[in-house]
Length: 343
Image (tube, rainbow, N blue to C red; front, top):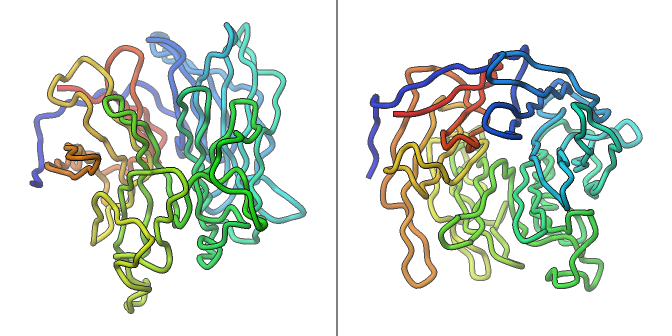
């Protein structure tokens, strides 16, 4: 079920001075990159040059800063959606905004969502985005306040679902008795990867456990994924945190102990490596590799039938993974690199 492969090639295509937390492509030869320290760049793969753009005001530090970004076309206009850690009265929260990209410039920056998770901690922001059918799904970490991941009146440890303008869909599942209407799923710890399976159309997310207990979850409307009541992870100093099963709480598709530290994730949609089509790729930090997962589905239930470790020879903290417009797979690293991955 698990194997390690050396039959993968890489090519460094860009280098930046900082942690490349997010990146996305505008076309086959250019795209955008977010550095956790707060800078936002447009880059060109042909010239190898980058241009600094106007970015939102972020509160950078710890795990916070300028985080994910996605290029979204809306009615003939190009928007750049981004997430970041926002300062609210000297505290921190997760926010999502967007800006219009035109003639090489970003303008009309606006916040579309600001999480109700104001805290003095600088960790567990979540902050990955996925888009489908005119909706955006945004992951939010528990912010180090784990008990609130089981509180639907707070955004801690949730995935929210919004219209592209930031308004809340009427068919979202919650809203009664002080429940936040924007929440789609809950009971998460720190989900930093999210994507839709292009075959089934189903939503998946990966999240960090504590000491072990990293997870890949099949995300469904209104469901509770258990943190911190159930987890396969342990406290950093050794003891168990909770149970592993409980009625009314979802089991992961797969979990990992020891931790692999999954950050970004993507389903491969390209055409350059046929064996990878439809597979899940996880960018891993502490374990310093790219992991390929093969999923199978039976009666609506998903399971992992194969795992493969890639790029461990790079010895890089791999922060994110994305599909290029050219059909290739790309990764980013905490050392500032964007790397093309191919066979």
